[in-house]
Image (tube, rainbow, N blue to C red; front, side):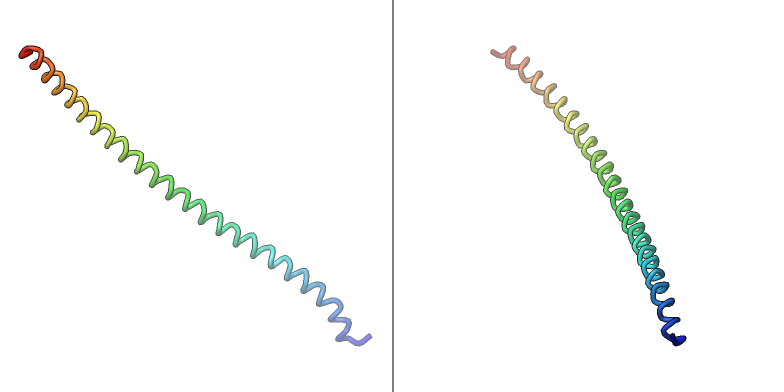
Length: 85
C-alpha cells in the first residue's frame, strides 16, 4: 500500500469526524444565538405590555372620575326637577 492511500484512509474518516463535530458546535452556537434573540424579543414585548397596561389603568381611572362627576351632576338635576315638578 502506498503512503498516499494510507494517509487518505486515515485522514478522510478523521476529517469527517472533525466536520461533524464542527457542524454540531456551529448548530449549538446558532441555536443559542436564536434563543437569546427570542428572549430579548419576549422581554421587549413584556415591557410594552406593562406600559400599555399602565396607560389603560390611568385611562380607566380618568373615566371613573368623569363618571363620578356626571353622577353627581345627574343627582343635582334630579333633585332640581323634583323641586320644580
